[in-house]
Amino acid sequence: MTGPPGEIVFFGGYDPEYPRNVIIRKGLERLGVRVRQCRADGNRRAVFRYPVLLARFLFSGGGRGAPVFVPDFRHKDVPLAYLLSRFPRRRLVFDPLVSRYETRVLDRGDTEEGSAQAKHNWNIDRITMRMADLVLADTGAHAEFYAKEFDVDAEKVRTLYLGYDDTVFGRLPERERDGAFRVLFYGSFLPLHGTEVIVEAARLLGPGVRFTIVGGGQTKEEFRRRASGLEDRMEQIDGVPERELPRLIGESDAVLGVFGTTPKAGMVIPNKVYQSMACGRPVVTAGTPAIDEIFRPGEHLLCVPPGDPESLAGALDELRGDRRRAIELARRGGNLVREEYNPVKVAGRLLGMLGGEEAG
Picture 1 (tube, rainbow, N blue to C red):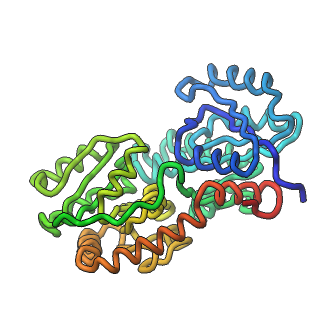
Picture 2: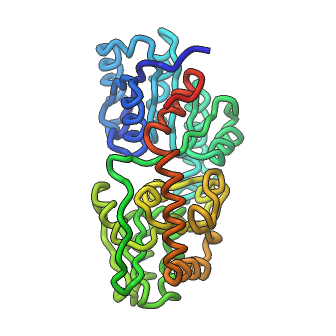
Picture 3: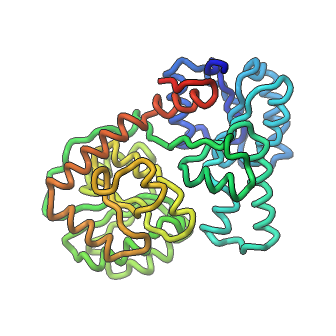
């Protein structure tokens, strides 16, 4: 078995500031691994992006045999990365983060199952995952889905949990309550988030619980309609830079995860769960197979059934009424995340997959 690589080439039209990429890159660099970035504008069509990527890869020397790492969402850059990783032979790692078929058909529902578009996206997932030497999944539930749905060798699909960026998110002091119990949700309003559950829970709880809702996306307009009449207890913010999120988390008594009932909702652990725990705030989210992989409900966070506003309202009411319980959940969850899912730990696990024993 070979040792872990001293260099890794990040390749494709990826966003270098996307949280997953930042966490892995920072962790690798702290472990002494050189990260070469070979990237092009991801908004350009592949016919224009490929020549740029090819030239930059060849000009940089391609990392002299270093593994090629294709980050999240860059399925269409995998074929070129595959060719470049054959001559000379080196490992090709694909970190899709999402399945195109799963996202468009099973979650967002903007493409009908059985349609030409659905089959097209299914084929892209299958071909690109089968090309890679190592496919990363953010949860074991996703790893199992990839292997079964797309007929990918289960031995090469490995789980690398998301983690959090410890240069942005970290332990915050306890908040002094000012009368209201403050709850935060932030996200991109995908169906898996189940934001309609949050609205109905807010109605059940009354004005003693104040919600801050941050972000926008597919279901935002529906959310606004549902939230009509809740202006006295719900502040809506279109979006903030990531570095503003710790301030909002710090001003909250609890942070919400996801509550949707789509298949994808059961296979993810959202960024916000790790981030909020790292900041020392109790998290309430839907109980799912993915959550159960690394967290113990009732010890690290509170879980409720997906799609159940009554249970969500009950969990928030429990935290509002038992401050000691809220503090203890935040302490235990925060300790776990900070110890096991910081950038060095995440990157160390990746290096272990590439070269032997876990590093870091």
